[in-house]
Image (cartoon, rainbow, N blue to C red):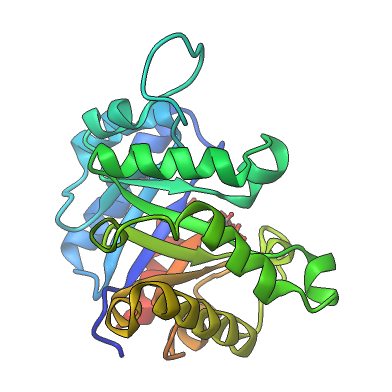
Length: 254
Ligand code: PEP
């Protein structure tokens, strides 16, 4: 089913100061307004960029998202940024469950469940990440690991809430390493993920769910990855930091 929404989303991570970030957003926006993409495009930026980047994007062409949000609604949580604050900048998306947040900042399935709830409650669409470590893949545990990540943080959602979930499969061993999963490995996992979504929400909802691949995706491998029936686009780290590289991936949908 190639009818469901296709998305290429950038994840800037902790890169660029405010000025450089706004300049990149402008450049991406201009390129895509001039040459309309054949897919949805989202850029996810550090919190401090959001409000300024929102002002330079035509969000009919390039959507805006955060890379995280708090697991609490509001109050005495020094340094945290709530889903409501994110939404108030003009952002419409939030990445949750990125492996770097899970690994380096101790985000557990329980915390992620709360973050997802708050993001949806505040009208954000969630790009929810899952993926196994190299050790888990070598032990052939990737399916059970990914299924548990979904079951523990997002399969509690109602069918209505599910419509605002985008999934991103990012094998940890392929992130920022230059090692891409082969398109067959990625396709196999995305087909498996779609089957678990079907078990939970039904076949039709599963067919409508956008599932992205992430991990060293770039302009040179995107056409092959995106040609697979279950791969609906990409979540892009390193290659989202230059307008030409990012546009090169988006053009894989043409
Ligand atoms: C990511 O961390 O979301 C990612 C896909 O990174 P990279 O493209 O740099 O591997």
